[in-house]
Figure (spheres, rainbow, N blue to C red):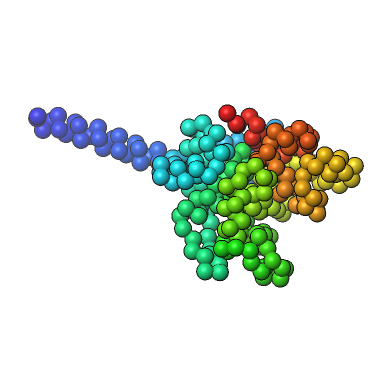
Length: 287
């Protein structure tokens, strides 16, 4: 092969390489812009048009390995019911969610990659229809081996959310919640529901636009005593849901994902409002 041909081939390789690097830089730049500024723009465009533009700027470049994906597959029917493309998106979101959080073991509990995966998978399940799913206001996730005494309330807790930026879980209750997907008890979904709701409530711009725009409807629904009594009469939710509007949301989320058919039958309006707030419908996702 002549030197001229070799030189030509090397030039082509160099151009392709530089082109790939250039594309990667552009994608990284867009990602940084999205994280920094686009959430503001997205909120105002959604407020005017009802359309979220952020979905057009999500790039599923780094999916989970097959080994890690299989861990979620074994524990989540939600994940199993997704298409291949959606599972890739789910995995990318789990990876990014983990990278943004600090998982801390308490009471001698050791944090492993599997534990991080399963906890993150519950947050991604709840927020899969959202664009702003990273819960930027909650950086720390504390995990106890079992029920613990809260430093805030002094009471025994299975889990809690501190508006200051921390989510607390007891592992034994968390794993029971994801292993039984039909009892409407899921600690992970419950506590993450609190976190997403509080973020939307505290900071409209950084909260998920689908939730922020419907908070007033949620307050009105909970404050409707006749409607609450109707739900109680039909056993649509367990009694704890009627403690306050925050628990009303968190418990409703558990029913929404675990037994959507029954929940929709018993509380069609509530189910529909949750589907709008979370921008997803578990019944449509099930195969």
